Image (spheres, helix red, strand yellow):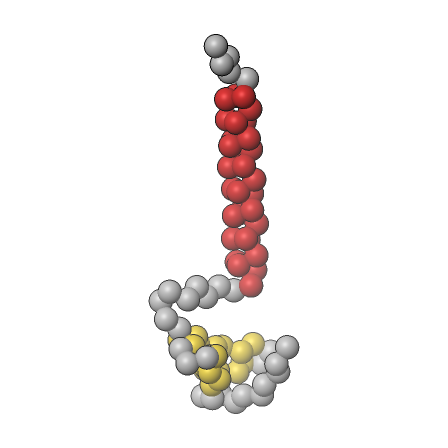
Length: 79
């Protein structure tokens, strides 16, 4: 992990397209701004993890449906 120290109104660049700025420091909280292309998703970590869990659950549900459909096709009469 890269650790950087920044003050209010300073920023860092990630690649050529993403800028992370420190907007304000209020006690133990830091307010940041992220400027990124629209096609780059930006989430808080807890939201990102929730999305990943939902995607995994949806994928498992879809896999179960496909498996059931394949079993049903396999049980059909070929005559």
